[in-house]
Amino acid sequence: MAVDEGLKIELGKQGVFVTSLQELYNWGRKSSVWPMQFGLACCAIEMIATTMARYDMARFGAEIFRPSPRQADMMIISGTVTKKMAPQVVRLYNQMAEPKYVIAMGACAISGGPFKQGYNVLKGIDRYIPVDVHIPGCPPRPEALLQALMTLQEKIGGQHLTGEDRPRFLDAAQQGEFPVPTQGEHDLEPTSNKGVWPVPLVVK
Amino acid sequence: MKSVEEIKAAIVAAVPGAGVEVVPNSSVSGQHSLRIDHAHAAEVATFLRDDAELELDFLSNVTGVDWLDKEIAEKVKVTRQVVKPVEGGEPGQTQTVDESVEETRKHVVPGYLEVVYHLYSMAKKQGPVIVRMRTGNRTDQVEMPSLTPVWRSAEFQEREIFDLYGVVFKGHPDLRRILMWDEFKDHPMRRDYVDPDDYEYEPTAHDEVLLRTKEHKSREQGLGEREQAASGATASGGGQ
Image (tube, rainbow over all chains, first blue to last red):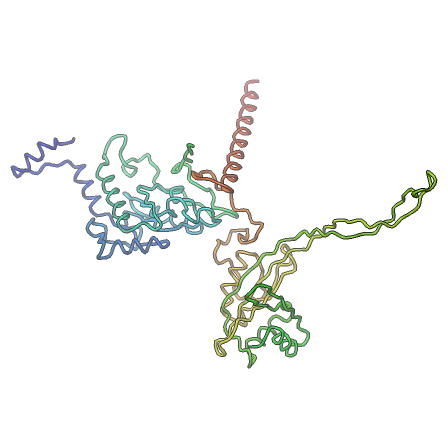
């Protein structure tokens, strides 16, 4: 039930505040996104800088870094995900309560980056868990992380609570827990979760 | 500080029967090293650490090196007896002549794993002294005495070499993989290591990566065709 924008402003002038439950709910969610306190590599240093006084992530309601996945809403994959670490990252993601969001920060987290052809580096965390926002950069500047947070907030703000395009956590039929890869004799097994990450087509 | 030859002489004098060999370094740095044998390794190391003149109390670095089997082709001059017709003689008349022929002979120098220790002295402010050890081969004789009992700082670095090269250190207090997970079977720093085939998505492939991506694609297609053939066979079987 979208309220007509013009009418809303007019009513506002008369001292009447009109909103919808969806708007209120999304406003509440997007205004206090609590990130999980964990860093993987050098991108974590930029993430820490973003939270400090100069860039001040608190302006967006995301200053409370929780050391427990049970209390966090957002996971910032800040750095290289090694194949030894990947199962732990997926496990931590599974332990977070819905609704939950993922920002893949930096070249390594989104694709493996400069270490892509290494034997020990996962070629992007989106192979195992759904990523909401990808940030390129090596490492991305704090402004880029803030931009990603604003993008995420926009995404949350635009979500519908009912209907076909409702988010995963409101759809009981959707997958809630993601399979944790096992560490095999030569590589992670499976090498990707095809349900989350259907192999993209390379168009030349 | 003593030269490598002097250190070698000192070791041989202090540890009777120790096999020490100077491995020369022909580069500008001229950092010659000492190769020691397995049986006396602990004694030699203890001597290097405790000797009043050397006092090598600091092990800065332990490195692994993988030397593959090397095939060496040599050209050798061989004399052979050849039967030739006599020049100017009657037809059919022959003689045996020695003729020198060049032959290429190939022989394989077996590979080995090598571990290099860089030693310094904090007390005497001198170093480095470089000590090497080699394994018998790269497959079943990969054991080597650990120097962790002598220099504690070798512990993690020897574990890393065990993990990445597969050298088994005898006498190491806690020999486990340190970087890769325990279930991992390969040794990634070996030169014949082939990394796992995770080339399903390479948007900017070139050179070696492009080759691997093509290999992956062709294997995937091959698998698909086989599956199709298998399902086709069962379908026709069901029809009968």
